[in-house]
Length: 208
Image (cartoon, rainbow, N blue to C red; front, side, top):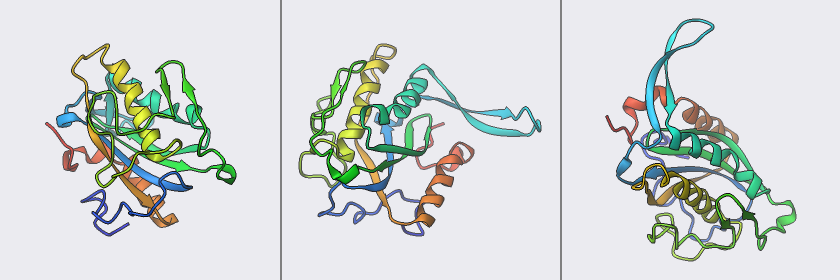
């Protein structure tokens, strides 16, 4: 992680060409809606019940609540995944995905999700919109159990259900990732995610 973390989520070299994105690691992921449309809700001023102090928080829409719920359910479909901090913002999702495979034996595992009709055997470069589902520098298909498959299935579940409410709902075809390499970076990124609603006006994805 560079000192410019809060100004730029990943640098061109962040995606390691020889890195196995199905291997055990902590990944900071950002997924944006197409054209940064604010499908997920709004940032609003609220008062904390205990102190009465005003602060800002995300007020999720119906689609935003689904995006939140589907994220929490990722470990149900990928049992080798643990979730770190995450937040659903008006037009993007930040989250930490922790891949921890016992003895690395789940590479070829298949998990069916009855609600979304999705299988983890599908690859990420053929998503529900017909547009590439790869990250910026990916050039090969994702095999089962990789970060790309996890995110693609999350995006697909959201899209299938969000389009029942808003037929135009679409994600950006790509997502952003960063490998978290140490505890300091993990804490810094976790704090950044938690404070994202407070800093919405300065966020690079801000749309008024």
